Each structure stands twice: as C-alpha cells, then as structure tokens.
Length: 151
Image (cartoon, rainbow, N blue to C red; front, top):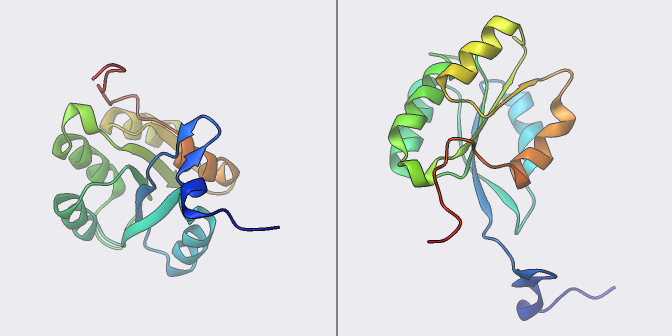
C-alpha cells in the first residue's frame, strides 16, 4: 500500500478535507488523560491542542486560543468542569461555539441536567459511553453554534 501524496491528502471523496479539529482536554487524571490522548489523536482529523487539570488552567487555555472541541471532566483537581463549560459558552462568539462533551463518572440525572443548562452538547458516562467519544469529537457539532450554511 502506498501513502497518498500531498495533493491527495488535501482532498477527500467529497471535496477538500476539513481542517484538523483542535481539542482541549480537561481531565485531572494523568492515566485517563494519556488514554484519551491516544484515543482521540487522529492526524489530519483531530489533535489534542492543549490539556488542563484544573478549572483555572482550562480557562487560561480558552482565553489564549480557539478550540473546536472541549472534552470536560466534572471533578477537577481545582474547580469544576461545569464552570468551565459555562465560561466557554460566554467566551466564544455565537458563530464559533465549540462542541462541548462532558465525560464524567458522575452520571446522575441531576448532574446531566446541570451540565446541559451550563451549555454542554453531550454528556457521557466514562464507564458506559466512552465508545461514543471518538466519533463525537471527530464529527459532532455544537447545538449552540449559530453559524449559517451560507456565509
């Protein structure tokens, strides 16, 4: 099997390849962070652009650069993921809202509703729903984005 040349990698069957999605991974477990980086890194499709273990680190990254996707844990080493979700929705303009996926061990209905109220697009249980994460990161879209089809 040969590897595609530069011109071939720039296009796909339906036209130009979309730009690589920049992911901010907000998780305080080093072990799980390493596994998520391995799971979600897909050159040309998705890249972990930054990582944070605390609410303040996450907010600092959000203020410094633009991300297409946020994967957010609720319980952080300092602060919490719900506040990160709420702040992210306020920091980004309506036409550039990121996809926000909460990934947590605290998958109660109360926590789920709290996350959606703060602005989460998806709420995944780390134990039951992890298999959905890669596809959502690669192809999901934020319901909060007000981007129109015709610019």
